[in-house]
Amino acid sequence: MKTIYIYPLKKMIKSEIKLELEFLYEKTLAGTVNAKKRKQNQYRKIISHLYYNGVASIAEIVKTAKMSQPLVASLVEDLLGFGVILENGIGESIGGRRPNLYCMNPEYQYVVGVDINLHTLNLAVFDLNNQLIYREEFKEFELENSSEYCQALIGKINVALETISIEREKVLAVGISIPGLVDAENGLTHTHLSFAEEGLRTYLNRKLGFPILLDNDARTMALGEKAFGKAKDKKNVLCLNLSNGIGLGMILNGELHSGKNGFAGEFGHILIDPEGTLCNCGKIGCLETLTSGKILVRQIKEGIEKGQESFLAKYKDEGKKIDLRAVVDAILAGDQFAIDQLNKMCEYLGKGLVTLIHLLNPEMIIIGGRLAQAGKYIISPVSMWMNKYAMDKISSETELVNSDLLDDAALMGTMANVMKKIVSD
Image (cartoon, rainbow, N blue to C red):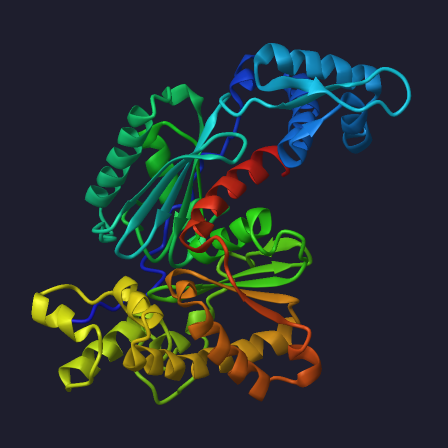
């Protein structure tokens, strides 16, 4: 029987617990509340410069931090003492003595990244140089709206930290990417893992003891692309998450666009066919009922049942599961039936993207998610339909590309989300 998700599932209780992100040394700062806040902001300006620029001298930090040279020098000495930054050699002279260079201490603290999907779970741990020091994919991890699912997730996080011998106090935060409607500001999820009335962020914070940042998967992917991928030097980019469903993350004027309640980007639920089929959201004729990884898998299975020739027919004979991963592999291997089904799906996707192009005039559209791995087999047909239906002047200025980050985009986005919050906001 088909499961229908009508969201929001229930009215959540807004959490009264504020999200507090602190570096270890900040917990020891003395003085009044205002004095501590002022000092914290000064330290974070230096950390922000080093995090985003890698290596810098005091003179270079002064230019961006807009603080005096003596003050920056004093703050740098403090941060060296705390252990959050390190000396990193000597720079080139631009007149006078060669300057000392400084960088982040990558091992000072760590960020845990969690990418929750409908059928899988991706887990990562990053150091403060954005290096992936642990990554694991759990392929049979079905998303359920239950405390049992969260307990299993918590167990995976704890095992990861034990495996790489990271003390719990050195975890800066846990960043989470999850499908569906997410109110990131208040830490609430309305489609999945909405069982806890206190909200998912508060629930996990209470169980794990770490600060929790969460957001919708497509928006998290967009953050990953902006920080580490093809959107890095772009101002207006649309990031599509094409996996079992369809999500959209929007970078507009250089910033992530979330909307009033954080629900912007439900591209998969724009109306395409008023006489169409029922969608998981409870509405009729959504784009996601015509073009998504789930639909592609279903259509291929139905075709095989009717006798269509496909590399995937052997899966049925061998008792193997035909999932999106298998379908993408078949497409890349030249399975014509699978390619034809993807082409049909791309027509609806291309038409939907034309609406976004006309409304938002992006400089780039990045296709991410599992289907991005189909490469030219998805880019070429989508481009064809976009060019057919979009205004030439607008579409010619929009570049359609595949993500280079692929399955790591959301994980990288969880890291970007945490660091943006602590050093930029």
